[in-house]
Amino acid sequence: MNQNRNRLVLLLIFFLFATPVVTATLMHTSWWPYQPDETVNRGLLVEPTQPLDYSVLAFGDGIAPPLGKWAVVYPLASPCLSPCMANVESLRQIHRATGRRQNMLAIVPLLAESEPSTAVDTLLEIYPAFYPALDGGGSVAGQLAQLGDRTPDGERIEGQAFLVDPSGNIMMRYAAGFDPRDLNKDLKRLLKWSAQDG
Image 1 (cartoon, rainbow, N blue to C red):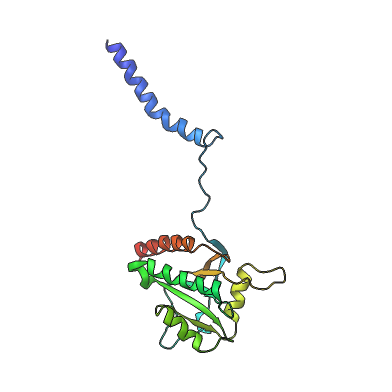
Image 2 (cartoon, rainbow, N blue to C red):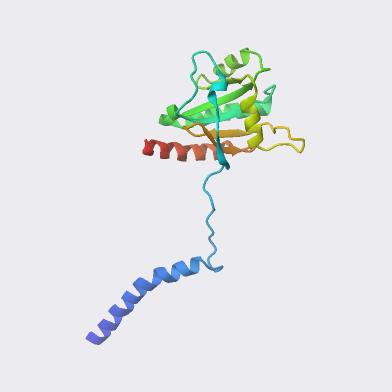
């Protein structure tokens, strides 16, 4: 009787230690159907990151550059018609969706110098929490055009968004026609991580 019990205990100990080894081995074979994604972010990483110089941008009256904040920089099409305005509305909703972490995020609609001065006021009417910025010399738009998708002729493709970290580095981009939910998911994770880190 004791001999049978001892054998049973030994078998249980063997299975206890062998099961994780067998499972790990199976996960590295073609028999295991699940393959995790390589990355969890929805946007495309900018490698290497590049600093964005806020000092060359003219922000609206009384609006300081978003230093120390996460920022979504969205170069507006000129003129900003239906698809462009739909993205502006989506960015407003994304900012609202961050809830209590709204103060950690700035949405920066980027205007070309050819835009009328009333464009800043129009954006602030849509959402007073925007950080509208005028790219007077076009240097920031040019930098973003180099990082983003372009036409075969080298022209910037409208409708791309860029994520800037609190240190002012452009670290991620979202292609034209991006799903606002993807940007929202990335931001929620990054803002949560930043809040825990700070």
